[in-house]
Amino acid sequence: MKAKHNRDPLRIASLIHRISGLALALFLPLHFYVLGLALNDAARLDTFLRWTDYPLVKLAEAVLVLLLSLHLFGGLRLLALEFLPWSPRQKAYAAIAAALSFFVSIGFFLSAV
Amino acid sequence: MREAAEALDVKVWRGNAHGGGYRSYSVPAQESQTVLDVVTWIQQHAEPTLTYRFACRVGMCGSCAMMVNGEPRWTCRTHVRRVLDGKRLEIAPLRNLPVIKDLATDMAEFFDKWTGAEGVFHPTATRKDAIAPISPADPMRQLANEAVECINCAVCYSACDTVTANPSYLGPAALNRAWTLQNDERDGAYAPRLRAVSADGGCFNCHSHQSCLTYCPNDLNPTASIAGLKRLSSTSFLRRGRTR
Image 1 (cartoon, chains in turn blue, brown):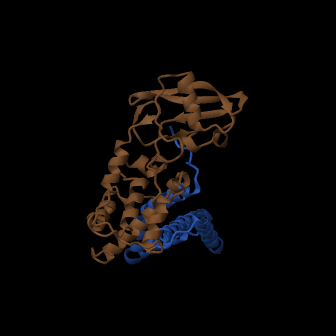
Image 2 (cartoon, one colour; image 1 turned 120 degrees about the vertical axis):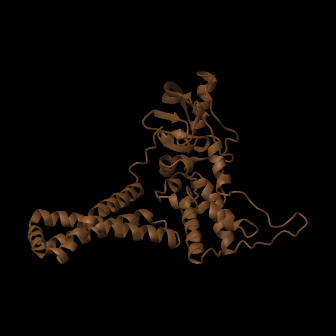
Image 3 (cartoon, chains in turn blue, orange; image 1 turned 45 degrees about the vertical axis):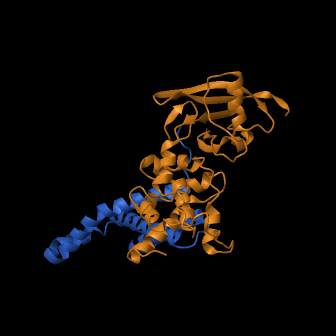
């Protein structure tokens, strides 16, 4: 009795929006902790910043940027869906949001390495 | 109707609220055969105790919806050749609703949610008053027109993943009905209905997967109706409760 529309692009877009939101919520305390080091422990901050120069860490940062942009563009898509007149191009908008997110994160990675 | 030589491999879910499973039947394939024709053939020729629900057979009454090869469909208007997977056809009771027996589900909670969403017309005039003139060109009437042809088949309710995840969610059909009434200027329950659809289990639970739009047999768009209710609710919040 299971429905077979599990691979519908809009269902996947909704899932990605929630997972990226959760991942960002988990990331934020770490982010604020590092910002706090700038005020309280400059030496440790410098050590941390040197660690972020490793390419693998840059790649992890690019993944974070990807999550952030997926959540941003996905959220804009939902706001447009709910507050603008209805458009039949919903799957195209989800694809554009995903494409923009990959564009931003790959751009970040290329400029960072 | 010309009878073809080949047979369909049909699996039908048999059971009740306590559980059940699929049983296989071989059904003769026919030209222009609907899924409801297949179920009726099984009941008349193979399984007299098979329970299912139908009435009009022409897509008006909304009582024959079932899961067909994993997707909710109105079976009287679904041609077998359009949904056949090879020669295989798997028919089950509608998802997201409790089973009474075999293919018949208990629709009580589905209709209770219509009333929960204030999907009931509250007249502002009596029979002694003149009939309210409503122009077909009126923008509100046009919004209602786009959503009003619902036949209560529960296909959207069955397709909705949010209903699966959150049984208290009112669902696409009830909210779509509420949207038509919010755009009916003869109706007198705008504010209580807005409260009902904005409360827990209301329109803000919708994740916009748009399965209701994908599967609605009447080509309605409950997602757009729910988005409209979200807009009304947000606007009312920004105006501190003032509506319209």
